[in-house]
Length: 147
Image (cartoon, rainbow, N blue to C red; front, top):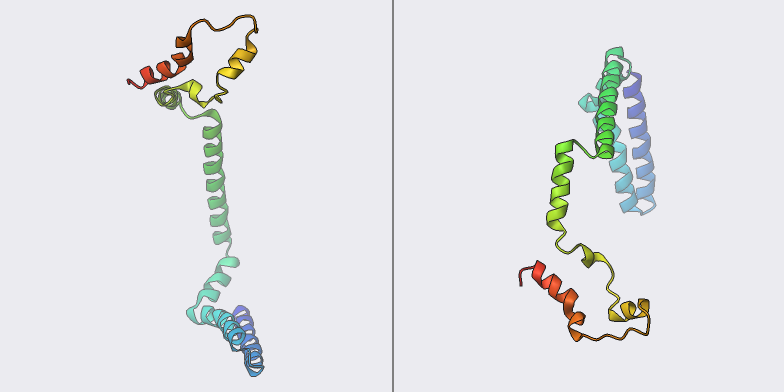
């Protein structure tokens, strides 16, 4: 009973403010205020406020919210543990096998610095004697792709 009275008073006050705003020729703001003001009145008329008031003061409803909270806590805890452990052994094996299948060229993700970086890492006294070494990386990649 009190909740309905408060909601009705809020709606009446909001509609009064909307009327003053419309009088000041701010029609868009007045329409928005009227819309917000009619929401509590609509909730009272549909019986939602009475249902919420009954729920708020019901020990059974609060026990139900507690049970829902425990269920949510269990669900999120098991999900976190599952993510942290990586799932079951079977799932981990399948994931490793999938990684092996997907990694066609594992060295392809490493940055390619070209032949200059290799020559800089080797001593300068050892010049290249064979030009076929230049294309050995490319040939290995093409062979892996079956080309």
